Length: 77
Image (cartoon, rainbow, N blue to C red; front, top):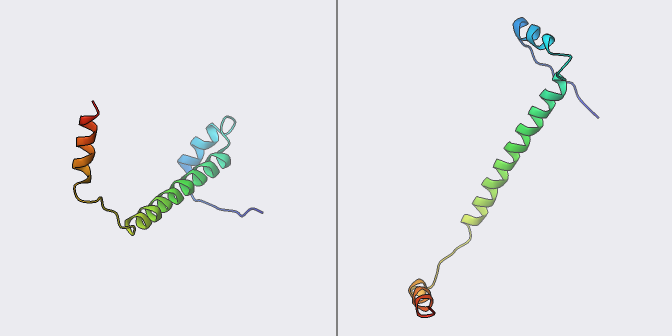
C-alpha cells in the first residue's frame, strides 16, 4: 500500500523540472532520495546502538601481557 506525500516548490523550480520531465522521472528520484536518506539514518542509529552496547562491555588486558607478547614475538625471530 502506498501513501501520498506532497511538497511545495517554487514556480521556477517546477519550470526547470518540467524542462527535463521527459528525461527524468521526478517521482522516482524523490522516492529514491527519501529511501537512501532513511537507510543512512537507520544505519547511523544502528551504529550508535552497537557502540553503546560495546561500551557496556568491560575490557582489559592482564597487566604485563603486552610486554610478554612483544618479548615472545621478538624472541621468535
